[in-house]
Image (cartoon, rainbow, N blue to C red):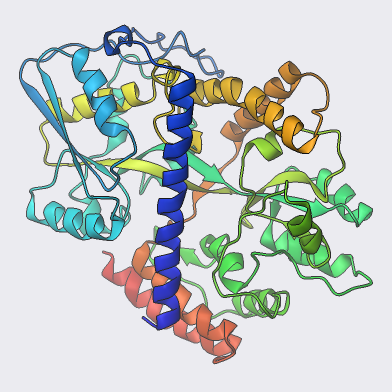
Length: 479
């Protein structure tokens, strides 16, 4: 591993930790403004009964399980994070569950140490019952044989209602029809067009989704007076990260890199990369920073990796430098998602596994978040919780944007919230794919080879041949 990659990984971890610290600080401010009631006031309530409705239940109808106390049962949990609120949530759960003990082990916000220790404990048969999935390669057969399948555990719950969840996130996370990781929240990217090119904005607004290949094709159609690159985050690694599904058949363990299609794809992706682009580096896009955004509007056709979901879930009257947001998919039309999830020890007792599922449901109880923002959560997989966050957070964000930047929402705040909910609900009908579906080992190989290509050390043909050989071997070793 070269020095550049070590620096990049270190910076990525620092950014993640910084984001969590910011989330914690925001939570502290929120708690000061909204003191929570005594713990005993947050109680479990029976969820909604299963039905055939396609709409998720309202938060006050399907909040958590009908917790049945089981005498002297212990649930052990591992997480790398100290300040994600998990320990305090466990205390709330135990107040409502006589005879249940929950023990949470943290790793001082050190994901690298967590991954090393938890993987070793899994292999040794000494891992905790419920574990944060970070660093656990659930698509590796040597690992997932040690994990429980969440699907039968959920479906044995009489209160489980598929309409309450973004089931397509579960499908994207599954391996061969089995769910070894249980996503509790997910994120995805959207693309906006440079409004200085009206025809470009019109094209984007006619689309419901867009892929990297679509953007490259549009770039060919819309020549500009000043040469412009695709977008700030674009390089061959970004392009392939969203389209790796096209060149790897993970289910059949086959690779398809040594093809004219792949060579053409990375060649064009490289041609559209800004010469000063650092390989693999991702920048957030703070659309409220006028100077930053103006600079981007002079160089790029598109905008990606927007900092706040609220920015593209509502419409403002102001003409932005980039607008017309649509979800970013792969070439198969699948919404490419990242997720935060838990894995379950396959060696734990069935009763403990059922308890872990009950705790996950409690973790997604909207009433738990009425009084405190416990964690930095993207989009909850539990749809009533997603709706709750939109209803509670969007009005505040709209007020913030108006007060600090003078942006006026189009229509009423109520209509903006309704539109945000509708746009989020529409995701339930999109096919999805996991962005990290290939596993850590394969991703490292792809990154190493593409970095050499990005730096001009090898040709596209050499990259294709190297990837074909090395990825084929890595897939075979996964079992």
